[in-house]
Length: 66
Image (tube, rainbow, N blue to C red):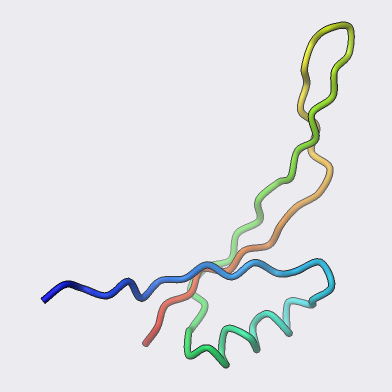
């Protein structure tokens, strides 16, 4: 019998608070197990060289179904 994928990632939206995201996770029947922050980079070109600068961050929750 194949094992179901019971893991899911939830990203906190721009117009959403962390508490609202946690409530959304709970309503879907999942439990958050880990929080991570992923940087968002912007590519800029100076003197012909490409550089990447962090401009924002994204909060992601990893959740499992119990």
